[in-house]
Length: 354
Ligand SMILES: C=CC1=C(C)c2cc3[nH]c(cc4nc(cc5[nH]c(cc1n2)c(C)c5CCC(=O)O)C(CCC(=O)O)=C4C)c(C)c3C=C
Ligand SMILES: [Fe+2]
Ligand SMILES: [Fe+2]
Image (cartoon, rainbow, N blue to C red; front, side, top):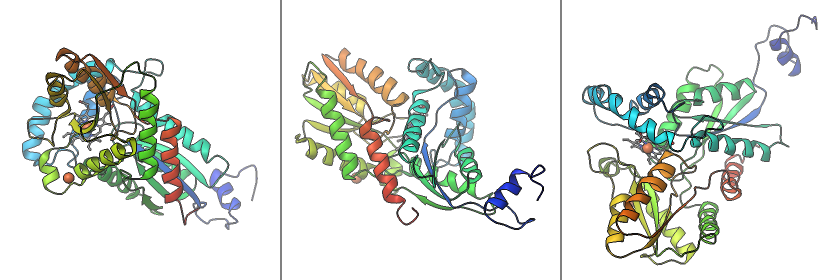
């Protein structure tokens, strides 16, 4: 082979001792793909609209028949919501990197996980969002280009829901549908009751409470809601959330009154799983509770729903209703506790491959 004229493909073939003319083969690496929900590229109308359009067109998110939903989505939701949501995103935007916190934190998680596995050149870590950019498809393409013939998909949702975990896995397989030499895929299961996760949450609560000049009377474990009809049709999310709270409460030695489960981030007019976080904090204040803390165990990264909705809107509701002290406990993010959870689950799921 003429070394000067050698192409990248030639080099890949010769590296794996393949004869000339043989197509390039994958080189036996394993890809780990961290995936979260996704977020707009900017706070302007068109960036938010593009993101919401992709998100709210997913039938895993809105199950209503398309003939009914699309006129509402295009006629009402996408003409009004982007302005309001964009203004909310602007209050939490990472101005240094000009991106939303969810993207900054997910990148941080991927970089720290890659650093953990840096000494093993068989493992490649990528990250991709279910909606918007960087995409799952882009991450899959990159893993394949780097020689991965196995992919471990990690949907970053502790509690399973068809609206999050399942659609992330759908998107992985959609990306793989186009690949002739399709890598083998595995997916990290929901980890709502894993001791490493419960312990990380508990330590994050203890660490945060130690920084305060008050002791909360009640800690709310507030999870993103889902429509009640999805729960009734068999989505296990509600049960997973209740179990996470129970295990966390037991680990912290709290009573059922001291730690309660609530659901936030309602969308649309249908009934969602209850109790609602905003109504609960209002009621707590009306009942004379003065000091509360909120933790969001269902979010692996802080985002608009935790930073703007909980630490902004819900805080205001509680204080306006007579509350005196409010604190939001940060998500595990890329903290040492959070990374311990991700590393532990990835190592377990890589067994047999590495
Ligand atoms: C029917 C609508 C929605 C369902 C069902 C839903 C489920 C769901 N979502 C998360 C996690 C996140 N959601 C986020 C934002 C967000 N969620 C919805 C709607 C539904 N979510 C909307 C319209 C939005 C966008 C913001 C807004 O317009 O209000 C995010 C944050 C993204 C960010 O950019 O920061 C996360 C994370 C879970 C876990 C879940 C069900 C279990
Ligand atoms: Fe959501
Ligand atoms: Fe349940």
